[in-house]
Image (cartoon, rainbow, N blue to C red; front, side, top):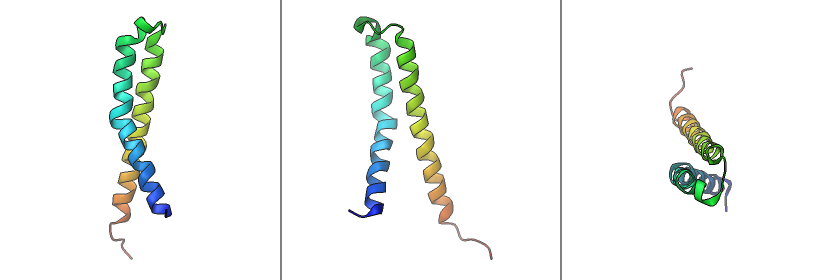
Length: 75
């Protein structure tokens, strides 16, 4: 497996974690936290939510950097 394949694979995992898994886990924690005895469950919910935002920000920065690297430079 080449280095680019590993980067792509990691990018895809982080993308799906940030876009689907963590928001779903946040909703589940918010709804079921009191039933599970996670007190104060709001701290768990907020931590998971912030982690999702962090991943989304890193992916956005990575895509912006990749897009800018394709632009021609002036000499």
